[in-house]
Image (cartoon, rainbow, N blue to C red):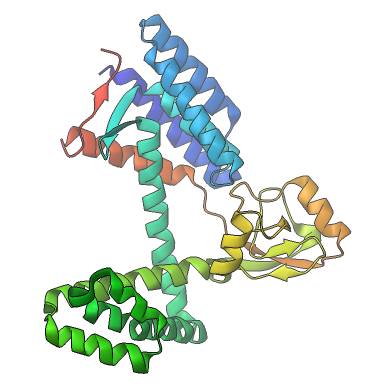
Length: 314
């Protein structure tokens, strides 16, 4: 593979990371200019797959941008990667563009960072830590009948989770005596349960662990609210229920934590018109550094032979 596109991509990602960390913006001169340069480069090399992958990456990340998953600058950055590196990576047997592979790695790395920081802050907040531990305790109580009875009852054991513990637990114990569950299987189930419950608790408490109260007069474009602001000026905390309802449009809101691009100028004007004086604002993570790390990790995996790949411009 020609080393020029790789080196050029690394330089663009380094500059994007610098500007994202310093200014919280990714310059169009880098993303759009870089995309045009790489398209011309590959067209001069008679490689038309670059144009196709750039278009595919643009469509995918434009949809993610419209859904509020990524910001506009990030979407343009991944479109650039699609144009610069016409590679296909097989994931679950489906070939995906290199840009999407890097995006998934960046998501994983950013999620790991959030979990580490949130866990550290949680340990410093004893009241919230108590609530999380109580949630773990309740999850274990409700799931114990299912875990013990599953080897005997199979999928039917899920019914036990909806029964009172005083009913479900005796049934589970009888089923466990009938078909002895393996100790390793039970421990594995408990481990998955506790890890999933803990991560979900961190996810839905992120707005509290990563937020600060800001006067509405000091809000800037791109700030991400830590609560849902409804059309009547009231607010809703982001819980699993409210997040799910807001995501499907059942809760109409003026501003909320689901939009990666944050507040627009129109949103800020509407908040002021509603008479809101202050608002919790979440600490936003610049995504470009994780894209750079995902880019480096991707090439380590590719050249280490861990992940197969297909170069479309030989």
